[in-house]
Length: 636
Image (tube, rainbow, N blue to C red; front, side, top):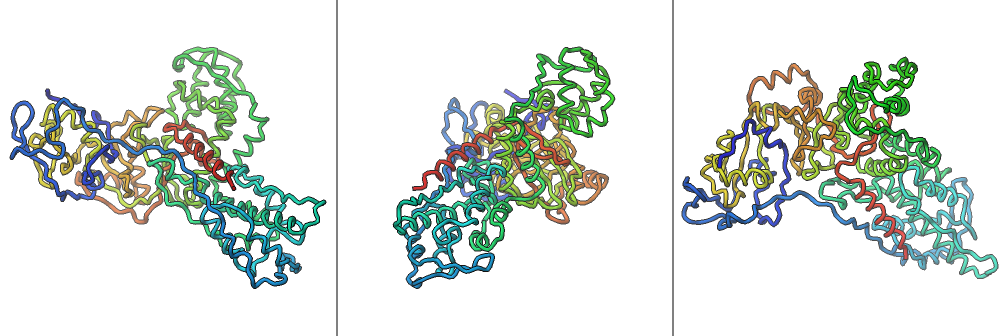
């Protein structure tokens, strides 16, 4: 049976691939091997004679898959998986060194106001009896501070907790305002019975409180800087170097600060994106318990210009509520003049088109479910709050300062944004990985732009998509004009034993108008072999749901993005493409790129927009929140 394709690019609809093979041998040839040109493998691939039926390997020897029953299921390559989140291990703080024998009478504590107070040595020695669990970093900071006899207690003075402690507890109690869970930082007041005159009972309660509050303050500072969960434990699609947080000076600074509550609260990120999320969160939580009026638009089919529908009134009302101020100003006359007509008139069409444009939807005036969702807010207040909390956590995984020049891809928005001089200068639609070929969540740096690229076909696509066709027609790749190599030597597609191992087989598509990568690709080398690129499949950009690729990011206007990152013009980019030759150009300065995943994120005007959770990742983050809070709640 012969397979004939009009266009390899459109038929395969592919760009990147996942290079993880189920039950693959340890020496399996991977996508990264291919991209690096590493074809010197130890195992040889067997050639076959061209003959009808199943080819016979030369020398009668099969590959690692040799002898496979032609009727048996084909091998498959699978992608990363999601994990059951395991919270960070907590350990008991080693308090053995806290009862320093050098302390004989009192420790001078010069407070922020300059006053000195006596700290009984006996009270300090009770620290050795305190029982507190914390993660390794927090425990280390506690042991360093309280193990130094020169450091006084922070939260206790004499027979009672001080105002500094009360201020700190107030700040921790407001953790929800920055997307954290106050339950993670709750400290019980010391259980002191006024009727019990035993000073040992009192001091034991006070020192337990001292250590617990210090542990919670340190945990809060760490969480608000780096996030409370480890993203790499969520799934194989998350790839971050977790931030290191310097906790060593925190307790000393808290003790010396004239306003310890403000000091603790100010540890949160203060970038414009995080501030916008924080402000939106406060607004929604203050909005009448989430019971604000919900506008419903009910359509059972597409509403097109010239149609009529009783839902027009709700459509106008919804845009009046959820449209931007600029939009409402530009269409003030239309909004004011609308008198309840059911006609989808040109004026209303223009209003809808501009609304679609500002929401990143296809601005054609056709109202479908994606437009309805955007018009009506799409989410309840409660679901928006959940998205904001997840987004604030994820924002902590990225640098606090994204930089004055950077590229951000937001997968749920199906958009990419180029920022320069601190302002968004370019945005465009993108196609990202489908649910079975998800794009990763990570950050990197753009290094090069490659013009007229070859496309090295990943092993995942060779095995999952090409192999079934090659077993039916070994000439399949020859007919499509693909180049095949075995151990670095060019061969005909028809000469390879496609029933044997593909470990040492590489396949690539030469530059052409049909090349799956189109005219160019923008590279930020990473272990996932993800990059931005052109595509001949332009029709995908007209769709609202654009999770359609094999993992890489397709650009609607690749020439404009290439010009932006190279610091040149679109005309100059066109000249590079016009050579027809494959060549790469380094960007003058490496540019941060954030391949991100936010279902809530502010636009260039600071207005938070909400998007569908295309991969269902928010639920995994929320499960990680629950596991973390549960683990932390089991203090003793």
